[in-house]
Each structure stands twice: as C-alpha cells, then as structure tokens.
Length: 302
Image (cartoon, rainbow, N blue to C red; front, side):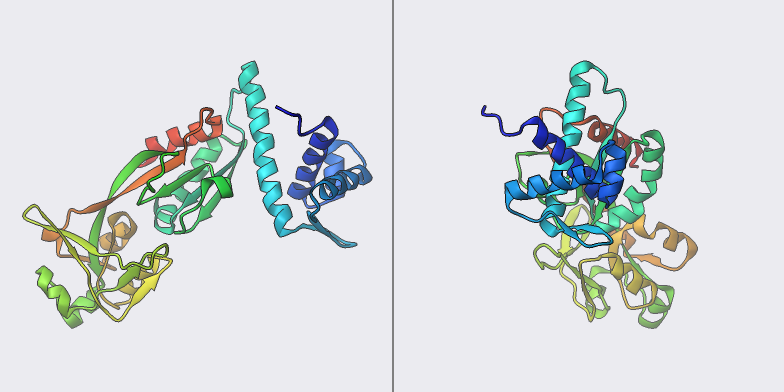
C-alpha cells in the first residue's frame, strides 16, 4: 500500500482536531505544547492539501466550516481508532475511551436510553456520549455513528442487530375525553372516535394501530382530525389534553396511567408490541467503548 501520510501531515491532523475541539488555535497550542503559529501553519497545510477552508477566522475567534466540521468528525474518530488499535496491540486497552456516537428515536431516548446514560458515564468517565435524538434513519458509513436504536431494522447485511425488547402497545385517552365521547369497548367503536394519527417521517406512511382478537392479529388504519409527524410524543401530549385516543408504547404512559392523567382502553384487544433493536456495523474490531455500551444497555433494558 502506497504511503498517504507523512509524520508532518499526521501531526497537522492532530493539531487541527485539537483546534476544532477547543475552538481556539491558542488553546490547542497550549494543550499540545507548541506555538499558536504552529497550529495555524498545520491547519493551513491541510487546507492547501485539500483545497478547502476548514475554519472561518476572525480577529476574535475561529469556527469550523461545514466541510471542516465533517472533516473534524471523521479525523477525530480515526485518531481515536488509532489510539485504541495501539492499546489493543500492546495489551493496554484496559478501559473504554473516546467518543461514542448513538442515534436513537425520540420515544426510546426520553423514556429508556437517556435516563440510563449518567450511570454509564459514571462507570466509564473517559467515554464521551454524542447522542443524536431523531426519528430519521442514519447512514453509518456517511455519518460516523457507532450505534443506533430502531424499531425497524434495515435489510443491511453490514449491520449486526441485537434485540433489546418488545415494547407493548396501549390505546389511551384522557378521562375528560372519555366522559364527553364515551369509552370504546369494541374495535368497531374506533370509527366513532377521534383517533390521533402518526405518519412515519421516513416514508410518510400512516402507522396502523395493532390489536389482536382471540389470537388473530388485526391492523386498523384509523382516522381523525389530528395527524402528526416527526415526533410521536406529540400524540401523547394531545391525548393528555383530551384531543382523542392514541396508541403508544406502554412504557411512555406508565406514569400517566398510574396517576390518572390517562386511561387505557380496549385492553381485551391489547397485547401487541413492536420490537426495538440495537444496530451497529459488522466490523472485525469493535472498539471497547462500543462493546461496553452494548453490554451495559442489554443488561439494563427491561
């Protein structure tokens, strides 16, 4: 393999990453034990090599350009992997280190993942958590994510899928809505109720409500005056304020049910669930920070 980087260029990348992380050539110079001019020359060397601007410079501050931000994220991950590879080769990788990038949907983030992260950080304080809370499917290769949690695992042979849990679904409504409109007791009753709908952000497809009746699985495409997209938690908020019925995960509304803000209906037709899975690339070398987080999450999720 032909050599792509010399020692000077690798050093320039390290100084660039320090400047990007600290937001200052002076701070990067202090951390590296060199002069600010040396940091500036290193960044200029990279910009000249690639023909792009990595920083916007003013008299008061520096700021990564869009290209610079993308290059910074890739370089930071590459440097971390080099450190981990060296530690693994010498038997010195005794603890997880580096940045862990996780993508997680809003529901699972707020009610499952985020409450667990302080405990993980307490166990592994040298791991920095970069959490992307969104319902958008991410691209592992283009966006440098280590892990993702999703309901629907993509048909991608390059990803390992670890099942986390089957999250039970429940239909809920506020007591005042049920007092006004009555409590549905059969699935046919849904046609006479306000059923809050949610469209998948990836496809725009309406999510059907899932039920079962005497072992038969049933999907119902409801209708109503409320259609949400992007953030499914908006449906729970609408239900709390008496807008109508909403089907959601039981783990989201457990406190509401216990404290009476919401009431579960159509329970004889319940019991359906959707699976949440942990996805990560199929790499021969899985960094210790990734392995540690996978083990932690699988242990902690109910």
